[in-house]
Length: 486
Ligand SMILES: Nc1ncnc2c1ncn2[C@@H]1O[C@H](COP(=O)(O)OP(=O)(O)O)[C@@H](O)[C@H]1O
Ligand SMILES: [Mg+2]
Image (cartoon, rainbow, N blue to C red; front, side, top):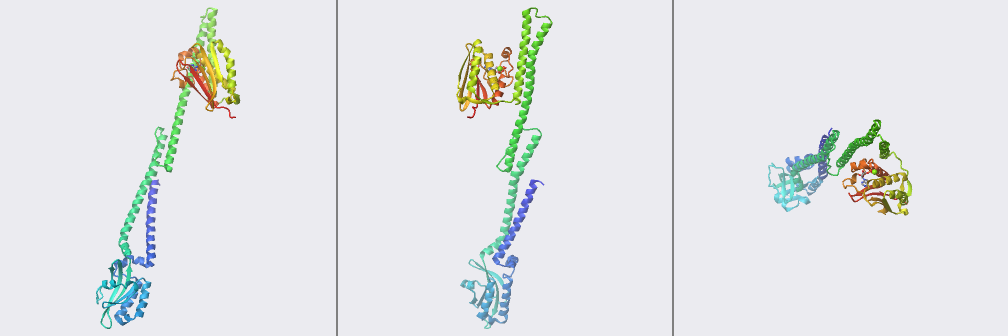
């Protein structure tokens, strides 16, 4: 059964139960007011019938009528009349007797002079026995019997019951009020049904359509949730799921693309030296190098290209192990300042021989203690320094190393005054196989993996690495590492 039908059924049930309860309440209300279950049955009958009194009152009235007909003088007996009146008052009615234009007997509440004036005239045929009359705000229902007293004077015996004007109004308005109430209930139910289906069924429908789209492989849409209810939250969660799914599919595609690119790069980078080696060997086989020097050149080319390949394979191996997180890090507390200073001191003379001046400003205080893997950190420094040396053209050639604390982190900057990297290329230098100027690197050699490896290693230390450079303005590689907790 669909939610729509369920809602419709439940609303109909509620409507029926409400009406039943309302009628029961109305019944109880009437019983509570009149104190008699039978009066409920008479509720309308009384009004429309000629009998405005209850059965009990009617019996007493008949007694009195009988007396008036057959022994009218007993209606002068105050004691007897008191007894009848007492019985009538138990039924919320009262006795009234007039003789000619005088009031002969009246119980307390109908003892108002106006009552006499409003009473109908004598009508000895007694055709209109039962009727109602209104005196100001008061309504009375009565049963009257006209008779002759023994002295031939006219008399009337009346059993009177006062009705509240409110009761009269309610009685007339009740069908209308009931009708209006029913219509209001019906309208309320229809509106509730409409709004509920709108807020439940519609979003559910939307969710279903969205799932169908996802099943069909379409993830590029947005599901907007309105409101703050459970269904809106479900839609929000669905939207988050769709976003994540889309991300992961895109990531998967990106991986796939990267993998293809990687294979293409590797093939290309291995193919080039192999082609060179093959050409040299073919030359030798064909006896091209006819002198000793020529032969040496050929052999040297083969050796260099084989070295290049060896290095490329080494770097590729290292990179892929780092990428797959298969290379464990052995962290130990070291003072980064001392570590870098030792490295710089070792390197200084080698660089001097190549005409490069190395200077440093290193903080060796305990503040620069870090948890690091010595070998891997060394690898990072070597890769960066290699680049500085490799791409350096200007003179005087200068490399500077600084290490200083910055915003609670350790900041290591390696700066050269080389050719720099173009602004567009800066964000990509840490990507594998990225080489800015292919023709330049074909002379300098290099796999394009050096900085990618450095990045993997620094990230393995929970640090970050980035470059700042401009063409012609030198390059700075900045490494930020978290200091060891003391
Ligand atoms: N110090 C530097 N000066 C100029 N260019 C640099 C420097 N360091 C890196 N680069 C650029 O970044 C690229 C990537 O560097 P790297 O990953 O070490 O690869 P490789 O050195 O094998 O080419 C280099 O090809 C070069 O274009
Ligand atoms: Mg390099």
